[in-house]
Image (cartoon, rainbow, N blue to C red):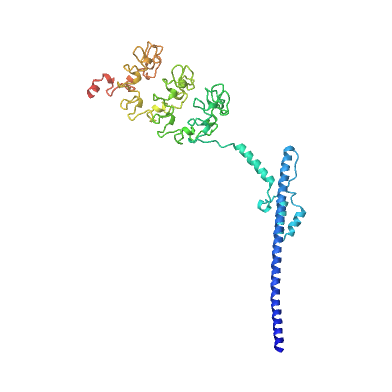
Length: 441
């Protein structure tokens, strides 16, 4: 009996010990459940606050939109700012109940609102779709699309397809020009004076400045097409303009490059008489320097403006000579033999014919300066050439007219010994009649 009683007591003690171990485990599970519930409640509270902030942002945007519409309808009326009224005491109390961290954020929000600054609210925090803001963005995008227009279609030649002549774009006419600028088609961009409307001075086009020049090419207006050297940027050799070729000339006027302005006769097409270029007048001369036509290149002294010494033309140098033919300036028209290149026989100049004479003055070649009387036209008395004065003598050698060939000693300058004229040799005789000079030769 004693043994059985002891067994029963030991079993009861073991049960009591087992029950004591299960109780702490239950308490730990309950504590974990409480922590999970608190986390869920905080998460729900955070979502609720984020939703309230999102709703608040939507309300602010709606108020601003309404204020803009009202201001458009009634510009004189001022609407209260939605930023100043968006924080209410109820919202501040809700933010204060969210905990210490949320309370600090609410205080920062309150301070920003008092200063009149709007705190940006992220869409991720709001957790809702801002329909009004999305609508505004779509309207703005649509307006930008209208302003920008569609991107032009580019062809394989890197031009607008509609204006490409090689591709035959829809804006290119049958004359291989832009339709609106084609005179034969009567394009909308051509005025009644048969010019491009925007560059027509008589129509006062938009491209004409107050100085009656092309605005982009006006030096006084400092147009975009004028470089720092006071020249057209595209034609400036110092700037290496886009129109300058590898031979340091204008590409369209370069014979070596076979420019677009060079005709089949090897001349500038506009100045070619055989091609009847646009720069040739009815008198078969260059239009701008034709005196009878009153060309734009003729000055008040009835000379070419660029070559007029009195007008100080652009082609006159500091030595009062033509710049290209000045030996002191080493002009482009002077060769290595110190002569005019075109008239130099050793250089084979362009004005030298097969008979080794000046082409224009050669009687065998019937040069353009030879008249029907087989004389030089300007020195022909029968033709009343320009070199014959009213005294029926050569103007340059006329003492009564005091021509440039007469020196201060009232003699022909070339034959004056005191002036050491070009026809006087070292022996103080006329060179062609000097026997000593012939013997030396």
